[in-house]
Image (cartoon, rainbow, N blue to C red; front, side, top):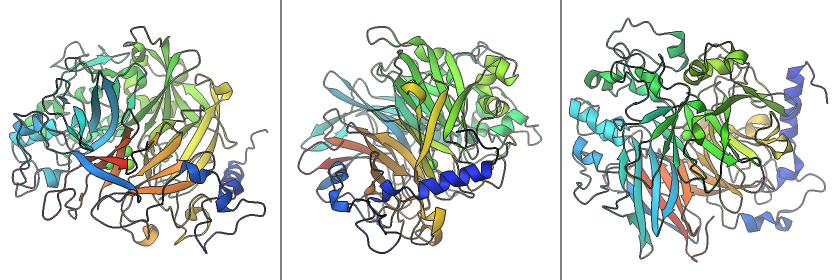
Length: 615
Ligand code: FEO
Ligand code: CA
Ligand code: CA
Ligand code: CA
């Protein structure tokens, strides 16, 4: 089919196709009333085999300050912010909320992406600690903000990555204190920078004349897991931790593209640690914004930041072994109007070989979605972009994407690859600027087929499949899996696609992962006001989808003012570990302790009461 020049008509056709897709009307059968007329010939709900796939009773939305799971399931806390990983660490202190010293020995704040590893009989969780809940962490201070150098050190110790062994005793998982594999990686941990950006005039600082030995990792958001059993941690909003002592400091176009400002966002790090003062060390920030690879089974290993995979606000890293054994990584840049990327390794993976350098060199691509449900990967090279070097591209990756005409997206969050076919799914969480405002590089963000709603307040999930099932192929076919929406208050596009109905409403899909059965788990980071456009949506939640039928069912509701993010399974698949991030971020939760206790981000374990597998 030729591509029409009339893009508006084309994307309208796509939107209508998504909204009218009859086979997706299943799931509506359980509710009466709204948008329920089954199309002629559509199957009734009791004939749908997907009931066996989503084998639980859906959980209604709620505003409770606890976790709700379906009947026949239970949950318990595995670890919360401030829990010590070693027996010489202090128990979390509700009054002081910990010190720099206690935090260095404890689980970090704001757990996000996580992956599970097994070594001998040990179960190890590698978990990101994304950012700080400042008013909670510094609730002991009058200002509720960091006030001293020690306060800043406490914060620097509370982010990064936690690696901890967990064990199951009498049905409950808990941290194995003093495990030789327990480790904290923080904003001060020595790292290695690899790839084109290393050892260049963009990454050399007065504190690191080689330009390849950065300290620390920041804003570790989603995760990934390599086939050679290492952990990938993705640096997202690294700009938030920097500021300038010189308020007149002239921000470059490159700095502005990443939202770097002279003013402090509350962390105050630049006052106590000059690395975070852009006026004093302007290259320091070029050493953040990467995918970080960590060997969770070797506590003495040096984490490596792989610049070949680009520098942007990395969400997660969805990795696969292509049929030619090259490694392909799909990655999103979570900001309004930013892009989707793909990395293809130079080297091939072999299970018995040393694969440790695979992510150090390869080709980087950015996605262009056409309005005819086809798309292309555009390689980012000095020739294609006109930029001076691959180092420049690997540091100023957003600029490279703009120069080749990549498609601006509605905030790409997690990406997940179906375990049984080669379809890739990605949450586009929301974008109030769609159709209204350029991205920070000045790229226009018109409504298009892949981002079909202006002022996209609910978000959607897109999917694509590479031609010939070859992840190195330049071409792919795409489709929209779900348009989130609210049929309680809207009809038309903002009611959502037909697989959205009053029983499964949600907004702002973010976390995304497949289980071993090929079910797609969807976690939300959205508006929890339960009001206006978001009425009946309740607290943030986790749903699960049958990607064969499109059916989506709510499995879990989180406590007040949390985000549900991070998911992995025990090796026997009888436990699902789920992250509860920032409960009470606006001051209205006491999860998990209840009563008047300090709210704390936590990892929970969810099991089935019949002891069967949960994913
Ligand atoms: Fe840390 Fe885009 O979420
Ligand atoms: Ca996220
Ligand atoms: Ca989010
Ligand atoms: Ca969050």
